[in-house]
Every structure is written in C-alpha cells, then in structure tokens.
Image 1 (cartoon, one colour):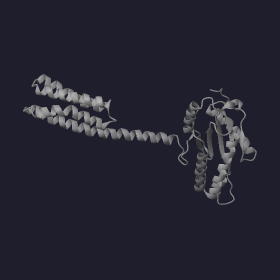
Image 2 (tube, rainbow, N blue to C red):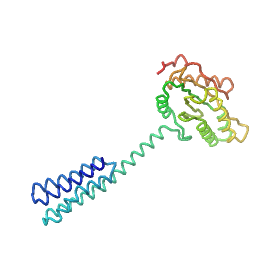
Image 3 (cartoon, rainbow, N blue to C red):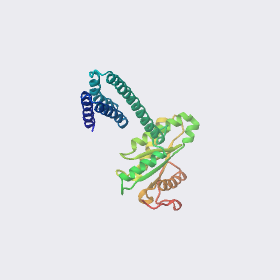
Image 4 (cartoon, helix red, strand yellow):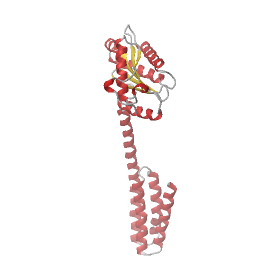
Length: 285
C-alpha cells in the first residue's frame, strides 16, 4: 500500500512537470493543481504516518516545482516558491497532528487502564473483572469456572493496630500472593476494602484445593507484614458455573452466601456454594 502511494506520487509529479514543460497554460494549471491536491489529500488520509505524507508531498510536488523554477516564467517561479512553502508547512503540521493523535490515544489507553484497575494493588477492579470474565467465558466454553470471593479476617484489627499504611501493605502483599497463586488465564481482582475475587477455570486444581491454597497464601502474607499478635487470615466463599451459571452477579451472590457461612463458622476456611440463592437465580448462558 505504501509503495502504491509513493508510485502514485511519482507519476503525478512527473506528469505535472511534463505539463509545465509543454508550455500550455491549461495543462500547467491542471498539472500543478493535481500535484498540490495530491499532497493535501495524502495529508488528510494518512495522519498516522507523517513520514509518508512528507515523502508523497515531495515526490508529487518537487518535479513540477523544479520545472517551474527553470521555466523562465516569473509567475511560475513565484508559484513554485508558494508551493514549496505549502509543502513545508504541510509537513510540519503533519508531524504536529500526529503527535496530538498519539498523545490522545495514549491518554485514552491510560484512562481505560485506570478505570479498570485498582489504584492501590494494581489488580482489576469490578469493571475490569466484568470485562475479563466475558473474555474468559468465550475462551473457556463448556469449562467449569469457579469464583472465589475472599474477605480478610482481622483486617480491621491490623488497620487499628498498625495504621492504614500497614493495612495498605497487607493489601498489596495479599494481591501479590494471589497473582503468584493464580494460573494462566485466571482473573484476580480487588472489588473494594479487604475483598478480593479470583476466577479460575479449574483446569489444573479443584475448588477445595484452590481455596486451601488461597488461605495458605494469605497466611504467608500475614507473616511477612505483621509485627505483633494481630493475626490475619481469610474466609473464602466459592461458586461454580456448573451449579450457578456464568452470570457474574449470580456467581458473586452464591459465593457471598458461602462466604457468610465461612465467616459464621469461625473464618479462615473455604465454603463451596452448592447452587445460586433462589432470589438471584439466572438461567445459564
């Protein structure tokens, strides 16, 4: 495609030069207008490629500009000067507009990333979780997805004892441990406070084993951070798509109910929901 652009510019440029050399006023005007129009049209169509704009503008305009300079006609020579200024300003504008375009696209990507990630831990937030779950569902058609809903036990005591800075360190440490524990394609998110979500296709481990692994990982995070008797553990509620379907709200509702049971039974344990709560059931996709 780029080579076609360059070849087209060359053909227009030398065609315009031939018209000028032919010493026909009509042919000169048409050739010149065609060359300048090509430069303008290329600029509007290829804002993402400023070097291509400069190359096609030079190849299209330079031959007729040279022909004008050697024509001996003062009006054509003046026109050649104006055309040179046009190409120069057009090239400068192309690079500046490209910088604006690149900066805007980069800012949009950064804003999208911030909108879908938790600032403290770098994990996905709820919006990011919803998006990634849709992608995981497409890649894991027919697979049993499990959603692990985590709530830290004793986190308020850590905050009250050591301060919020220590609490933030705990949250970051837990996030790191969960990322290390997660398998390829698994989703790890923080949805607020001391609550985390892990979604796994369970292709390499069952729900009981993974829940126990999460509890062990959080225990290691506690050992690295705590400096007194304040102990940190985690309760885990688990829901599975084979029982609850693939809808995120339904999976979270079932896992939340299982999490409540884990908390009520003393915490630091994993409970698997057998089905979605009746009032939130949505049929499987």
